[in-house]
Image 1 (cartoon, rainbow, N blue to C red):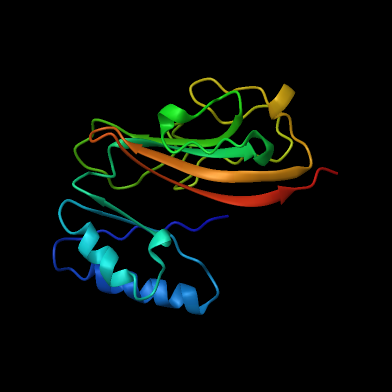
Image 2 (tube, rainbow, N blue to C red):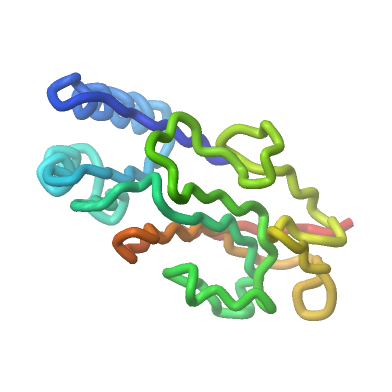
Length: 181
């Protein structure tokens, strides 16, 4: 399971200082953090500060946008499909197993980002068991059959987020193996 930490606060509250501390501690503990910075004006400045700890490929600045107004998909994709969408528009739902859908639209304030099925599962959506017969696509789940059927092999787990207000996207994939018994 991936850990997601959100740091929010007013200008000058110390968010970047806390983030640098967390990144140094994570690296010292053997973790590889991926940082998404969201700031109307200064995300690139903060990104430069973090390059002394992280390679720039592990940092994604989003300047001039609000990360709270968009949609994010968690996806499982067989590596053999060679399909790694970079925006939500590029997702081929015939090739992916949706693990979660999280969105935030038309709300003035956001305090907690949670799965849009209103399940109470904070930050990670509904559980999806390997071997499940349907994915977690909303509003209608897709059956996990045919080419998307579970099998032993190498998969990508990816997160694709698109900010709907500014039509900006970010994504991240990791590769792992599934062994069906």
